[in-house]
Image 1: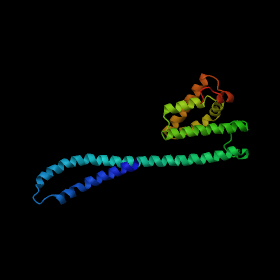
Image 2: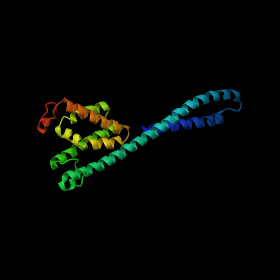
Image 3: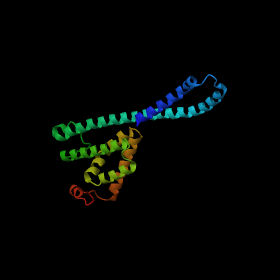
Image 4: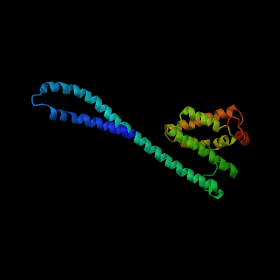
Length: 205
């Protein structure tokens, strides 16, 4: 798509630039240049519009490329973080090198919190690149906060997420506010499902 916009813009610019020269080369010797001048004035108005369209195409191409580069960089960072998390989860000794829990917690629960944090990070990434709308994200979060582990993780680690996201861009701030909103709604709706209940939910495929 970006290449198509760029080629279209460059093609229009080339057409606009070369047209006067082509007309001059092809015009017969007895051509009424006064009439051609009137035509060229009308053509000039059209060429302004075409030039604007061409420049808009080039601008869209550049914006698309910048967005794609940003998405690729974010994905590379996400992959690196996932590799570190995998190492930490595979060895309790390595997990001690990870950020310590904000409050005393068992090793198993600390591992579970890390998984739920990674799940939120995956939702954040999809929200950032536009794969998830706010409405779809809300649905995902409602399911996420049905479980007691997810609620416990956000109760403990939510303040850290808020500080980090509030220092980010507009979508980061929108994300953490929506997470807070859906968490509060889940808590108000009743007790969380225990692990066995959560796994045996009738609405799961």
